[in-house]
Image (cartoon, rainbow, N blue to C red; front, side, top):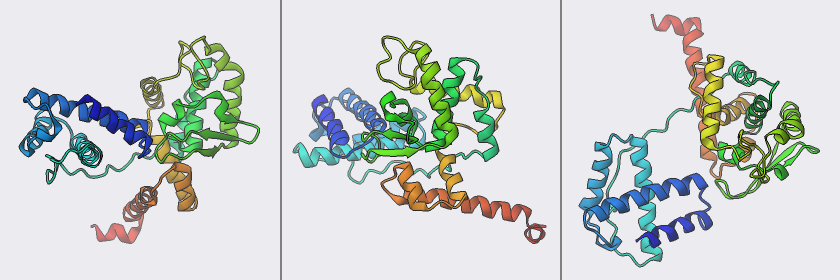
Length: 302
């Protein structure tokens, strides 16, 4: 049954243009269900009864999995069986009619412009690690790129003569795109490339743009630790994740009058509904501030 999973994952990445993160998540979810089914004596995907599918979601709940995790598992397994029935001749879909927990979309954390400035000011620019960190934060806020896209960057993707960075086509949506840099981000990139990267470089560096202290491509986990350190150092109360600067980038552009279609293109969203969510969020914040500060609105609450 492993062969079915591998072909499904190849289909996701090469035909459906799913992101690497999605493929990795779906790999985990399908393999976990495969292990669960085999533990219950099932050796063929066509032989899995629907009550076993229901039991699987109950097992996830019993393990204390969040509704968002269960919802992702549901999406992965429904997608997997849709593939099996379309391409692998499987006729029985145990997940048909089986619904997992519904999950509401979480409101993303958005930093104020003052909080962004405070976060950017934290790295110590007198050492190569601090210069690297400041450069990464500047590039994230300048472009709104995903953290996976940042960490996959190679030196050849940077063109400072025209002030652009190239993002590869293997991200979500499958389209190569070029991101502009504001002057400060370009300045730090130039400094990093001419000084800090050379110090961090090792025989294992390859063409990777951002390197860890061992000279290897910086990992997602490594970036998490860096971000957590600077949030604590800056004493910013807003929860900051690798996505926070991307969310803040989009919200601040729209707040300053940017066209929704432009923001969609910069974020690499294939569906404008994903971008419209930021507009809705700004309207909610504006309404909340209005209700909080307008004297007539205050009277109505007394």
